[in-house]
Length: 553
Image (cartoon, rainbow, N blue to C red; front, side):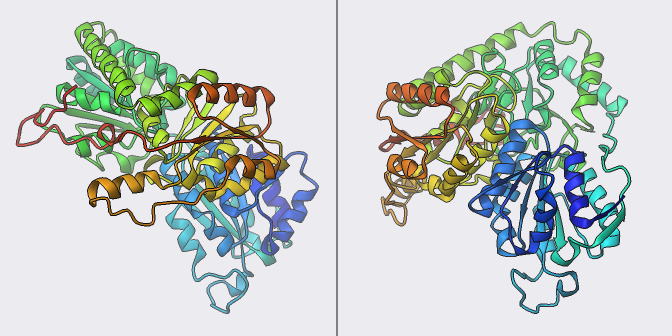
């Protein structure tokens, strides 16, 4: 059956598992939305109040579900408003489709000054995605769309981009055939490299596993590997929940840093494995094994002894089989890991007591399968190494982008896509105002998000650095923040205020039970400095001696 480019795009979205479209309509996409009108039963438009909100919602939905999500905006300023979310999707390995309109095809690149024209939108889109394409002629629409969806569903889970000129939406795309696109074949682990990795791990006395977002769908196999090797599983931002924080072998960055000089073999699973070797150092006594679906990441940040280009779905079962009973020993190492873990958990409680009080309040009311969305705020920084996570995809963070202001809109997308579990996001008063307009979207679509805003009337981290490192010469870091309770209520959102962790617990319970969008403002003052637990020094390869500069308890 012959279709227009618009109807073909709608049907391909539906056929390939996209049932919600985060969007903000506009003139260059009118033909597309007209085609969508009759298919809202299968592809529901969730319209935001700003393009960045649409893109962040798609990102939050993708991270919370592990499934592809899409957003649609107009070109030029509309698309550019989404780029912070798009580069964060790239950093966090999220399958997000950026669907943008474009000026008429004959005018692209001509510089006429048409509405929403920018010099080279495709170049911008290509720099923030793993793959992007534009359609120049309706005859190529079907094949181009198929390629875009293949890239979206296959390989490293990163965003892809697509732009379609406004004059082509209503043009005939011809016969489309089967609209469902299959995932491209995944790379298979090289048997010889698996055997070499298994040999190193069997010989190891003090192995360590590092997991990233690429391991989120393989929690059971990671647990089996950890218990087989009696090896700690180290998480940073994207690996939380792969191994439950309650497991004695689950550790976070400060614990891993302390143990780093003792480790003799490290295996990275679905992680860039940048922070530890590059920041903490390596030496000849440390062997590195790296398994990742993106071949270009192997050995990028530090030289690896065994680099395996493979999907973990294939590599982990093969590695477990090759290891056999290779982890029945190392009980002393397991006990050492437990000792360090308990020591650091106690340190967090004493040295970061204010932040930990708020974290405990949130964790006590959020069920184990509930989703927590962090932000660049004092509680957020501590949460990355102290918030317990018990299941995969329940701790969402910005990755290396450190995207201030992503919190409300991203948490909203997670809450929309995962209505079956509570979602609690946090933000500071600085970051909150970036996307707080999306509270109107929460009301319009009845999205049950609970947002906790810690208000210190400052860009708190900026102010801390200025005070500590620049002789107290604070500049442009003080804020005049609104009454967030009153602001929330003006949107029709439930607004609450908590001044103690116990009050926060009560408000969280009320919000989660009510199932309505809620903002809880928490007035706070200056909190203890968390950065000694974040920016940790090199401790291997320092003056040629492992362990030089080792931190103390």
